Image (cartoon, rainbow, N blue to C red):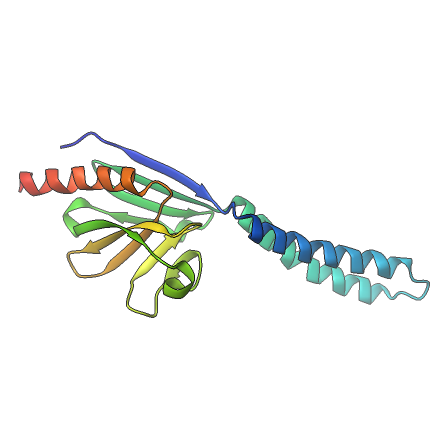
Amino acid sequence: MAKEVFEEKQAFTQWWIWLILLAVLAYEIKLTFDLYQLDDYSGRTVMAYLLIMLPILLVLLLFAFSKLYTRVDEHGIEVVFKPFGFTKRKFNWDQIEKAESVKYNPIKEFGGWGYRISWKGKGTAMNVKGNRGIQLIMKNNKKFLIGTQRPEEALGAINAYINASVTNT
């Protein structure tokens, strides 16, 4: 069996995502600060703005700590979208029919980035940025797309194991 290992860690690093999140947060902070400057401010109003700010902060933290981990080794392909442990997917070599490098449209085909299920028959995707990935076609005809910034390297490692498992059977 081949000894090649591919590992990749990706994060949400798109500047426009951070710009939107920080702009919304800055606007909420400004509104809350402006309320404090008024002589007739209500504690309830300030509390309401702070409660609105909390989910925005949580989303900001979620984007900051979310990572997509991909590992290809002799045991198969493992993909996990942290901090969500329930998204962990493991594919053994005997489950995979073929793999191919693809260019895709994350918004049109999967509705965006993250852990996504396509309504257009494209299967499931895990991605955080870009439009390149590895499309896995399983022996049960299900499809799974793994977003990657290094598609050639990932596909090379995957095909080395797929070819080795075909020769061993």
